[in-house]
Length: 144
Image (tube, rainbow, N blue to C red; front, side, top):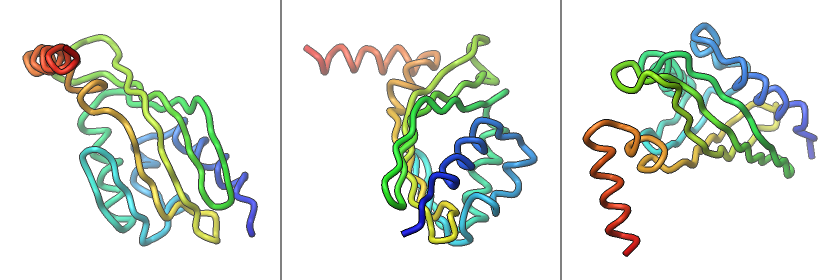
């Protein structure tokens, strides 16, 4: 079985240095039939994955990832990350979403499965005006 340590390092480097230009060409990181899922999207194919990354740069300002830890086993890897960004329409201070990504590598070392795990309610909705107050109230009610 192939050692995917170099593939994992390439993925970490890619995410920590991601630019709008890189988001337009994911072919050196993802397979043509790559599967991607996060709390808002579930798509298959390099073109669809590319649209998600491009959209990120439209939705938020100065997005950047900091990979905080990784685990590699055979063709699977798990990356913990902090995603920093500024909301265009809301709070002027930098925001942070903490999450994790499970990826599986194809035999050629490219990512053929990418699944993000993060709590959209806590990490995003609670930070928005109006909706944030409602989400925090719902959390308090649920915890009673």
